[in-house]
Image (cartoon, rainbow, N blue to C red; front, side, top):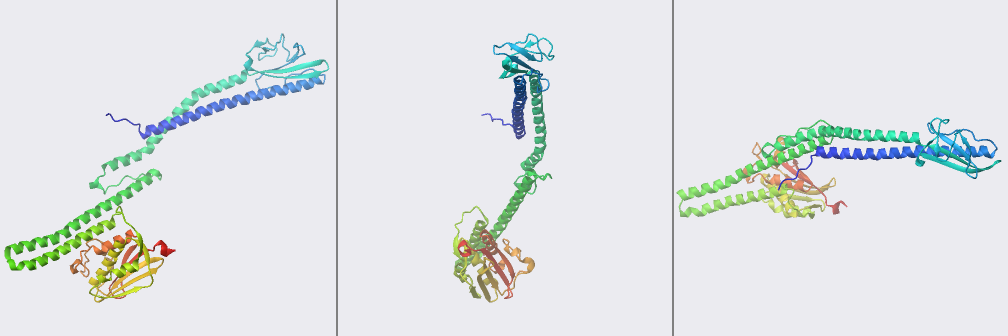
Length: 449
């Protein structure tokens, strides 16, 4: 089936503007001619009525009719006085052989000519004079007005199409100029692929909607580039971390098959089970981290007592002494399982790095829920505090690395969960001498009220 060809935007806009302008000019021309005709003919009719009134006043006073006074320019008006029998008594100006259907030429003294009835304006009135009843009529010819209107109509017949064509041509060039940046953007966008996400669309310095669209699209490309970069790093780091326990399991099995007897397999199984535990924990952490960072995953948020969630995860602190401080019940809106994982990761991190003491605080501060965990361990250098929330982070001084049992995903999950709940997490120095991790979350609507 042949694909239907559709007009381009340039053609469509030009056609629409040209049609709209042409229709507007046509309507304006009709209105102009109609208004002009009504105005000019109305003036003639009004002048004829005034002339009739003036002459009747003269005749009623016993005076003869005088020449017209109020005729519009270039309009010849003849005043005719008849008796009751229809006989012409007087015409002003004087016309020989005048009859009701006759009209004078431009020269009143010339021979009258017959004109169509629709080219005449007649006003009449009956008056009683000293000489009897008279009928006064003012007859005006519209010839000059009709010629003026015809001239305007002919000018509009020529001018309207020419003006419409000029507007259409001007619209074509204006639209073409306006669409040039968009065409350049389209060509560049067509060339951008997953392997060239670092390229950006050309930004026209026009200060209009096209420039704002380009800025928005470039910002979208920045987000896509950042997401693709993070995905590549995630896949690379995950594959590396998964390869380590798998390589250890394989090496253990190969050595056992080559050099150990049947009596050693119980020890081998124990070590393999520990490696399996690490592998299972790593895959679980990777899945949870992917879910917390994916905004498209559905979540069932509800009102949660943050202090109760933290209290339920205190068993994660098994080595150090833990001190809990809860000022009052604190309610937030979120997913219980995710908030529990957030609290468990922070408590487990503090327990692994503490020298012997961990303090936990849940309180209200500044209209937000604040959950903080302090330890008396080695702390985190200022220049490394932003990196601890990165996936598979390794600190340069080795004080808080994966070598003590972690896989480098716990704090990344904490930040992801906190931000997904509308909050964030920060790390500072603790009064105990170690690190303080502080999570701030918005309160639930019930507690805010």
